[in-house]
Length: 369
Image (tube, rainbow, N blue to C red; front, side, top):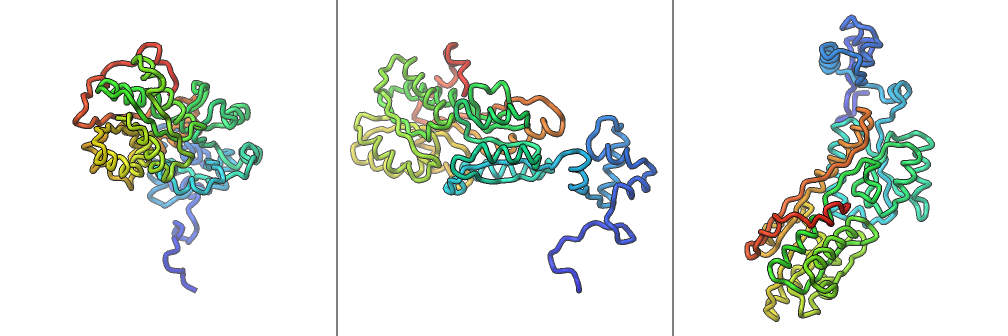
């Protein structure tokens, strides 16, 4: 029978066999040990020899045997990413953006992502299973909480991991994050500097640190400006955010004193934009709008730009950075480090942007964020 259409053909030698390390050794007149150590990244192989071996491997179509590598190197090239059983998360565009970056970078770094979920109250048991059977090389943790038990478990187990976000022990592990505190402190200070005194903050789920730190930044900016605490009303959505923006914007604008609305995600803003437009037409309120923009690919912010101030940071780029940081630990043996993703501000034309250039007060600069 012929080969089924579309089925990939493994590279073969002239005799019809798959190319092996032994074939490379014969071709280059080098030892099998030298070939193996060069292809597996050992530093004791010279650069010229390594380049020669890698060129021959590409030319002859050599592909490593993953099972053999696992036995020799005690590596699986698998990374576990454990999720809750909340099926709505897989529909969340924030998660999709991070995943797109993770998968692209994992492919480039020669890793596979093991995406799985845990049953109710079985989160740590799922991590423990992967640790005990040595079926993955490392872990991605997302949506960290303060004193996160997943971080404690993997730290005690001595397993490599990277966190999308941070908590108070951030100096002890690898992480990728934006500066949530700084971004939202600056957004609130910008609104205050432009004369606003009554605010609504439509935030995410403060069970998770990204939303908690954003709230802290907003709250501290109001306190540092000498405004009373009741100048701010906070409205929290559940996770994932879904369509909460519409109903929460309605609640926020029921207070006719509110002249500025700050959103934790452009997704919440898009859902609430109709309400904002209606309020402006109905009672003539000059409502200032500011939001986090994670550069979600399915939302085009151009039509919002004339009215909205954005702070932008790409979640897809964060996904790439998560794998890059974890592969540093796994492939290069480097110590864990934190990676702070770039954020940029894009201010609505009717606002004076000069306050963004001011540094945070000294007492606020060490806040984790």
